[in-house]
Image (cartoon, rainbow, N blue to C red):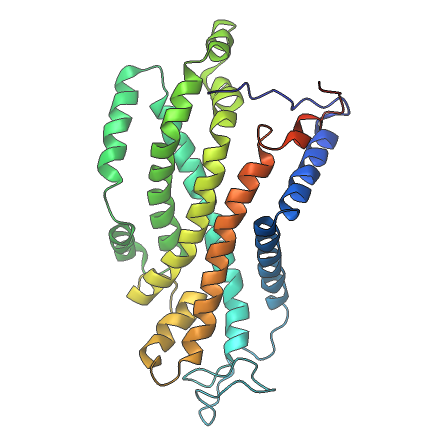
Length: 309
């Protein structure tokens, strides 16, 4: 069932103040739930560590010591050292900003590409809409790894390869999942009324159709964010992801996984961080979808300052 996107979103105090009020309600609602609180704490810590790593780490990531390789956790090296004698904790701190950048860029690219495809799917041009369905069904079967391998030939191993490959694949999936809701909204009476009143196609799409697929968009973006973390680790292990010398969680895994039977702790720490980050991103999307939807969050329906029966 579609709902009018402007229902309960007009603020008598002005758009900026109304937006801040609703954002505060959404955050407080997420914090009141255990899964939402966990996700906010983990993501907040991730962002904080990424910012701190720009100016400080316990040891320089380029500082190595051949006499203290694979050292156990100690007061000097909190998580031990790797095969080059570099501090694992410092490397993971520096890698957090690389992974955060990959997640943000991947989600933005996937959302933009996915919305472009959705606009084509609900287009009033029948040939364009039908052709888009066929193209998406054909392209979505291509594995992300294969796309990354093809991009790595002209671009080389880089963050760009990860973002383009993952964003392309996740954008296709977003469009396919969001198509039913978008089609239902595109055929609604208020969309037809807006078109009859002379509203342009972009205005109709962003004003009426996008708000109706926002719950789907939020969930798919959170899944894309979590999968991007895993994809970075996998593509880096294959040699087409983050290049050598750039800190990342996937790099820490790929360089130490060969010695997992001898030095398991060096694999445990990055693996644990990747797992926690993926779980937090997925929980964040679910919590945000429920907290930001007026149908599931009654407090939002009164955010405009008016009394509701």
